Amino acid sequence: MHSQGYKEKELTTALVRIVNNRKDENIPIEQILNEAGVTRPPVITIYDMVEVRALVLYALGIDRYGAQLREALIYFIAAAPVFRWSELRYGCSDPEQAIEAILHELKYIGRVIEIDGEQEYVWSSRWVSVRTIRKTLATRARIGNPAFFKYLNYKPGGN
Image (cartoon, rainbow, N blue to C red):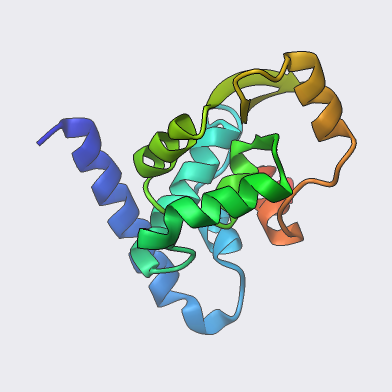
């Protein structure tokens, strides 16, 4: 077994255990993850935060599409043709490779673009320019909820 995959599985298992032990506390999963040590500064990126959350949600059976993943992605793209990876992962915890394979079939590409001083992983049709991506994302509200945004920006001792 690949050692990185093993570490990821162990981390996910530990975080799922923590979430399950605290599910009676009636607080968002994102807050539990932050309090368990999943925080951004100084080494974890938004992408890493989103993927850790997605792995935990998937293990808990939350926001999984399975066989309907392709259809769900088509509907998501219809609503938001240009999107941040974090926006997609907010409502979809299916495996990253499965999502990316479908997006590539749909002629979408991922790019890392600086938006508001942050490096963001953004997806769009391969024919859309970076300028158009920035303009599109600047003119619409970010997809997610307050607990999700707080999770992504959590700093230990600061929140």
